[in-house]
Image 1 (cartoon, one colour):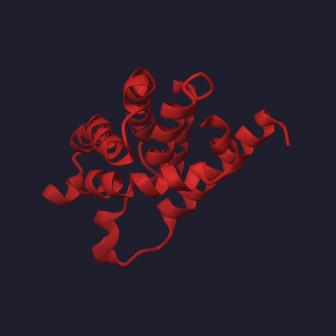
Image 2 (tube, helix red, strand yellow):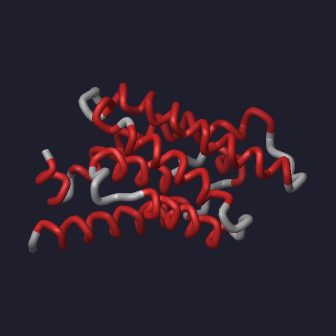
Length: 161
């Protein structure tokens, strides 16, 4: 398969898997601890292929999440675009770091996404579960190595190295 086709297949496959992981049923007590899988995949592609993965792609991923969650249209899309902008803008600095240091960066750039979402919840008069609202930042940071190693295991990601 050619390089462009392999890229597209890997990109779409990783997003489809992230959507499945986002909506797979978990016990009620574990729901606040669910990582933001779709955001992690968006950050990965923004950092590793910034010339091919654009803010529009991130916006579309966030819009897909809005539709599937039944959220206010554009709520997650705005947060995804902001986070992808940071990932694309800072990709040259961050890609050279080891995976565990990249994970800290991922946690930092997820904070604006979570803040925008929290602000929209407040504007809609929806309450959050206090500090548990921020748990996806911690669990997503912990899951970053899984995302990186999982996508690198594909054929296209090996061509990037």
